[in-house]
Length: 528
Image (tube, rainbow, N blue to C red):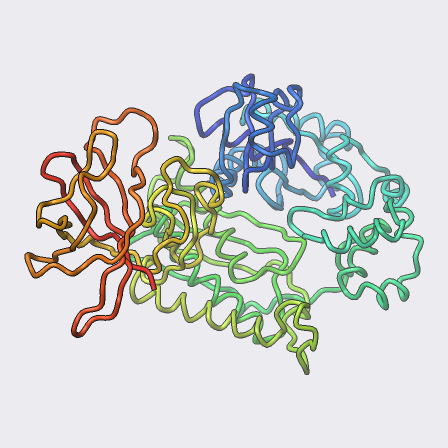
């Protein structure tokens, strides 16, 4: 198998999307840590896992980008199209990495070195990016060979893998961090040392995940060669009227199709490892791409790949994108394996710290399918989940994320935000602030001075011109704006404790005062 790898692809795609150039240092961050950076940034001592503050201190002119898998897939479609001009049967493993069968193409171009050279030149000319090519037996060995630009001779994959660190088993598309950490603690620091263990001993100690990793370390294929042929009726086709011409509509459709596609396979005890996505446009254009996966696809995995592929098709450069929207979409299980990961357990684990049991996972999957059906009735915004985010005021600290979308905070929730309200936060935040009046002991309105101080102690709170409710305690004021100069009115927040009324229990509320002359008071939230 031949694997073509584009180094630092998330950073390269982010720079391309921003219209910048690769001669400037850039890095992609997730959870305030570097996940990818350009070669120029790496030359300035930027490394994976580095905190953002440290990275920016090392390189003050570093361009900062967030993780965006759709962006990565959209720009990688140009690379896939360039490769497809020379070879057929390519499979996208993930954005930045694709695989092709090597036998036929190598014979046509005169050998593996000539094919590799042709592909590198083709990608550089057509897509404008650098890449490396590796050839070995199996996807895992070929991927590591591509990182070294090596062409491994047949039968020598195990020899090539033996000196490499065992941490190479923790690939992005097959997370094995726990297994790798355990192997390192046991003193198995190279793939060769792990491969020397007996397969039966590995199965008894590490389970199915360990057996799969052991096969990879021995230079074998990630899956046994005998696989089930997918029954033709497992293909899922869908026609659209009106046609799909927008990525957001396609993404919503992909969620429903992914759930149906996965359920049909699960009913037969199968799981998909190579997904073919084929589309026909309104003008009759035929589009197609195959995605290869190291692990069986989940419903979300199917939906993600369909969404990424639509990103690549519908947002391609003018002249390369389809001339019309997609009228028909077909999902084809190009390769399936036994759905062992879908088998239900006979009992749940007794250790409460061992994580969710299989019953809980099944319930979570059923709930996810129900949410998708509700979204089909109400739209993408019909099912949302809350996410604690960074911000200064209570309303901005909580974002509602549509079900299925990435739950990534825009800013660190625990960061130091200037003018943030001190803890505790209100238990209830009003969607529409309630206008009120705050008066002093003489019945005069309470306002703010130029230094954001109260003109008098608050004594009562009036709602809609009604009788004042006595204030028995208060805290603040806290400025509601940062220390920078602002052209808006002075603003400050207070916490007020309201006395009990005839039919009302004592209540603590959060109020906002705006303006020094004719102040405007509103209730933003309440405390339990």
